Image (tube, rainbow, N blue to C red; front, side, top):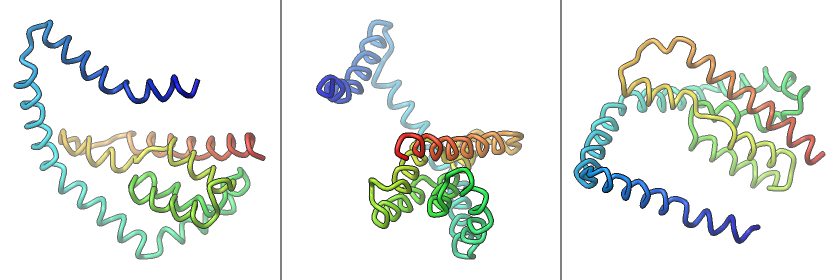
Length: 177
């Protein structure tokens, strides 16, 4: 079974790319010119979202440097400990909503400190894979199309992150207790 999964993982992306190109050729679509046009639009979108990313990264830096992260974790720790989320995982869980790279760095620290086979390491690993960078997504996607009123998108995203964090802790605690 492992050999089959490894073979699939090696060939999945090249097969999909080849299939899309063959389909486009069969439909008489100029593949190269359409690809370069899309790449040009992608570059202009990337340039357009730079102010949103800069503002978000600046806010993250100020939040962490001011001690806001530590303060928030100290308030939430007694509550989250009741449902099986260790206090050491909280900073990574909070950071994940803002920055994937920052959360990955925190995961590395947790794994170096507690080990990959620890409950904290397992919960943090599952949580990192099951949560989303909500504020990053809102900044990039809403900012790239000029949406200024996010309505309920942030609340829904954060609720999804919270549910994923809780589910990660519950499932890991059931599987490896």
